Length: 245
Length: 176
Image (cartoon, rainbow over all chains, first blue to last red; front, side, top):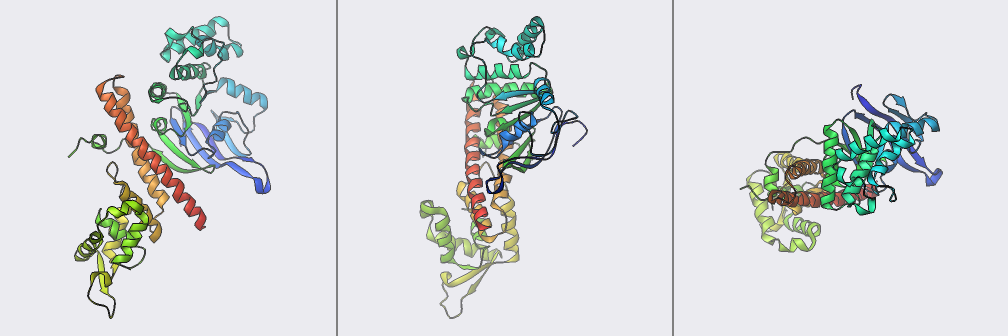
C-alpha cells in the first residue's frame, strides 16, 4: 500500500491465557488502511474482529507485532499516549450506541470536546454542526430514549466525529437496528466516505460490509480472504428481480 | 440438473451408473427423491457421445447401461474444472451449487471453502449494487420496495454461504 496508509499493522497479535489454554484472538494480522478508505472486517462471532478493532483504536494493547496509526507507533505507546490517541485521533461507534440517557443529543455530542478542554461555546457550535451533518438538527434537545434506534446511532456517529478523528472505528454499528434504521446508518456512512473519512467497520451484517471499498474475512483470529468491491456484472440485479429473459 | 453435475460426481473415481445415483441421493437427501432414476443414465450417454466420459463394459457382464463403468476423459476433466471455477449467481440452483461443493471435496479437485469465497465475493458485489440502488430511491417508493426484496434475497443467499463455509471448514479441520 502507498505512503498514504493511515493504519499500518504488521504481525499484530493478541493472545489470552497460556499453554493449553492459549487463545490467539488476533493472529499475525497485516493490515493497511489508506486515508479515505472504508474497510469492513467480517467474520463469525468470536473470530477476533472486535479485539482487532480495540487494538487499532488503542482500547487494548497488542501482545506482539507493530501498529502504526498516522505515523505514530501505537504498540509502544504509554498509557497517556493511548488516552490521547483515543481522544484526538480515533472516533468510536458501538453496537449499543453508548449514549448517556440523561443528556440530550447535543450534550452527548459535545461531551468529548468539553472533556478535551474546549470552551463550552466552541463545543456546542461544533456539536450543532455535527447533528446537522447527520440530519438530526431538529432532534438536538431530545433525550436518547425519545429517539429511534437509527437516530440514536446517528447521534453516536456525530459524537464519534466530534474530535475530527483521522479514523472512525465502528463495532457492529447496525447490530441493534431494524432494516429501515440500518439504511439510515448506511446512508450516513456513505456520506462520510464521500467526505473522505477513513472508516474501519467490523460487522457480520453483509449490508454494511457491502458499502466498503474493501472487505476482509476473518476466521480464528486471522485474515483469510480479501475482496475489493467493484461493480458486479451488469444486469444481475435485474436478473435477481426476475426481469430478464 | 446440468450435466456437469454428473460429470463432476465422476471426478472422484470411475463408477457405475447406480453408484453415481446413490452418491447423488446421499448428497441430496429427500430432495433427491424428486430426481428421475433415468436422468443419470440419459446424462451419461449424452456425456459419452460428447466425448466427456468413456464407458467401458465390465468384463463378463451383459450389455446393460448399469453394468458400464464410466470414467472422465481428459476433456471431461477440463470441463469439470471449468464448472467448479464458474461463479453462477443469481441463478445458481441451490442443488447445483451444493453438489459442486460435494463433488469438489470428494474428488479433491478444489477447496470447497475457496469456491464459497468466490461466490461470496460476487454476491457482496451484487449486494453493494442493490443497496446503492436502494439508497438512491426515495424512502417508501415503489422502486425502493422492489430493491428491498432484491437486497433481502442476496442476504439470504449470503447467510447460506456462511453456513456452507462453516460446515466445510469443520469437515476440513476434522480431516487434518
